[in-house]
Length: 337
Image (cartoon, rainbow, N blue to C red; front, side, top):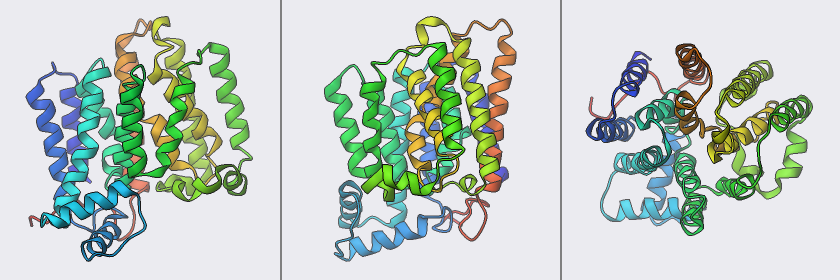
């Protein structure tokens, strides 16, 4: 566990330093190597992905998203190992995040910290296909005004994980204005609905896509913990939205994060549905650096400390409670020794 905490502290330190492209891209390369050189016992789904890689390598027509099948096939064709697949996958996940942060973030190195601190990086050890999809979805969001690129990156995301189809809602969300009344009404009404919304209702609404939305996060098993998490994120969002400068309240990242809060509140009782949240709540990696620079709060230090405390709580909660059993992510193990 200390290994992951050490990385957390290092990334936090560099997030407050002046941007340096060598440190920035060097960090992304290092994180990709850590993911690529891990043992198959690190991550709940890693051993299953190894089995899929072996089957596809042996010409088995495995029923899975076409981009993932092609990637496995290509790496097997060039003689690459399973860990080479892990490394390429981590690059496909981290490079789009790096590009998005450079394009849209007020502080790219801080965005990289939030990607790690909000547990997305370590969570990508589990749902590898989906996190590739999430990265391309975020890249698509950054091109919302350039429809050709927007649809191209969403298509790439979709052929890696079909659940990315829900991200097309960004087109509609971008046209809606956020007001204080809508934020308050949306958060409170969604929380009320979430108190009673269960799996059976969700399966009816999700239809054929329900199978792609199975939860990979442990906190869905504990309604009280999920409710606390929903309340914490809802309160934090309202505080940040109300104190954000007016011209940034209609920013797409602000709006998509709000959609994530709504979905989080509605699905807090569900075993299904947790994965869809990530396409929206990971907008936090762009939203918080923007908020730090463009808020109207006089005590800037308190703002930073509050959000960093929240990030630390999320990181430690999932690291401790969400990683138990044979395929836990800690202690970190590598194929090198």
